[in-house]
Amino acid sequence: MIKKTLHFSNPAYLSLNHKQLVIRTTEGNNENKFTRPIEDIGVMIIESHQVTLTSALISYLLENNVAIVTCDKYHLPQGLMLNLSGNTLQSERFTAQISASLPLKKQLWQQTVQAKIANQAASLQISTGTETGCMKKWAQTVKSGDSDNLEGRAAAYYWRNLFPPELKFVRDQWGEPPNHYLNYGYIVLRAIIARALTGSGLLPTLGIHHCNRYNAYCLADDIMEPYRPFVDLVVLEIIERYGYDAPLDKEVKKLLLSIPVIDVIIDNKRSPLMVAASTTTASLAKCFLGLQRKILYPTMSK
Image 1 (cartoon, helix red, strand yellow):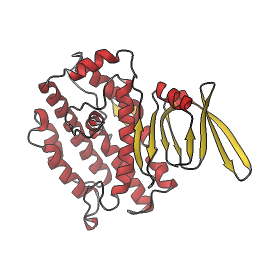
Image 2 (image 1 turned 180 degrees about the vertical axis):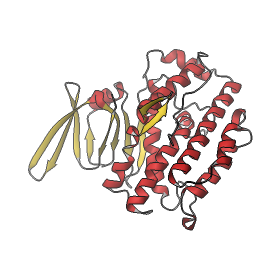
Image 3 (image 1 turned 60 degrees about the vertical axis):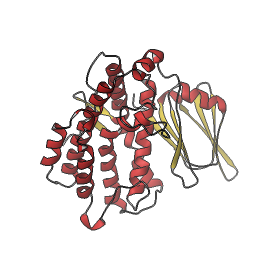
């Protein structure tokens, strides 16, 4: 079953009753009440600061591995709550992850960069028809640990050609539009990947490449890399409809919140992105346990 993403941008009171999410809203003097099955929810984004959640609801959401994202005063995603015991074999998998050797982590990062560059090349072909022979070659020649930093070389080529040259786009979290679209989409993606990691019994904090001491989601940031081009295509669709600098209003967010249900190809099967994320993290857990040597990443159909 495809898990749903719920987004709350208006005042609401959220509670738990008979294992159901109960949503109460008020319009004038009228109170509206409706329910949603919690087992159908994958990600919940709380944008309004006038949304109240009961502690019983939060506990049950996390028990069912729902990722809860909270937003700041600018309505941008800020915080993330995840289940701390998302897998029955968690202790075993934590141990395997923590004791992973440096050569193994370098090999896993090599595979991650290869998949990312290949998907960036496909994204460019789909969206702009740009020549991507160089990117395909880089994807095939990534060394263990990406010692030649082909990820950086490919990123420079990718961003230079993804948007029209007159835009002079620079990918920067704090940069000019359309960076704000990308930021929001990547936060949604990060929540999906972090949720999948905990569901597979892994620590989102301990990365295979990212190692910022202030980053609590280093592994999520590693594993989401090959998924980013799928978000980029959604952003291009937003630009085509609304322009480069439209505000993050309801219609724009609706498109960005469709990221979990994007169709991808993984393990030679078509799958929603959220399901594919769980396939990826399950394969990663098997790599840490020594049961297989390759992470399963999605590919972008051309």
